[in-house]
Image (cartoon, rainbow, N blue to C red; front, side, top):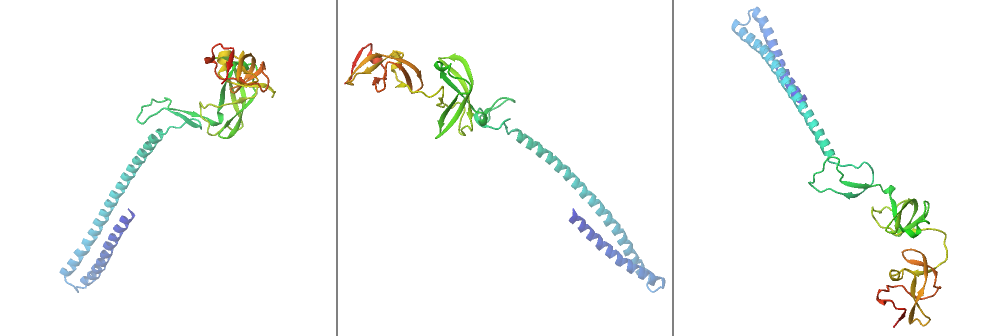
Length: 283
């Protein structure tokens, strides 16, 4: 628009310059005509040219005014179109942003129930966010220990070569399938790669450390109920039924309260194939 204004100004300057020259010629010849130094015909021709250039100057000025008004109207129209495009762009951006799903909390996406092209109603759940810093552990413990587990007890587990400590926060007294549950919180930082539903093997401290005779857990319990076990004699070739009494246990061992001494050799595998034999001969 500025360049167009400059072009029109240059045109008007040329018209004004030519008019100024013609005016000078007209005024000189007018003086000569009064002195009758030029003929009426020559003066009349000069006068007509001068008047023509005046009218032409006015026409050019009016034309330029109209052209400028037209250009200004075009600019206003373009500005209106630009505003409309900006409004449409903002609407498109809002629609695009509406397609971005943001969780109300910061965490880790552990469940996503959505497929490309799938319709989801407003408010329908599409995923699950776990707050890693708020992870806790729910452990199932044999009912045998229900009187020995209370809030504040500590435990630990190993994961990826590191040991992490836990503390019992809550004990659920209800027993199901011979087990009860406890909730445990992390003492310090939780593992970064922990996942919901992951199984952990936790060592829970139930009391003071004490010496005890231990026997490895095995299939013999299913047959004997922990009331007896096949014990090898001194020769190591004969095993006899031997009464025992077991106490506490964990996933690896039973505590022997009566019936065995350190160094005794026993059979801990399944007894299903032995029937009701009192004596086994090992070959």
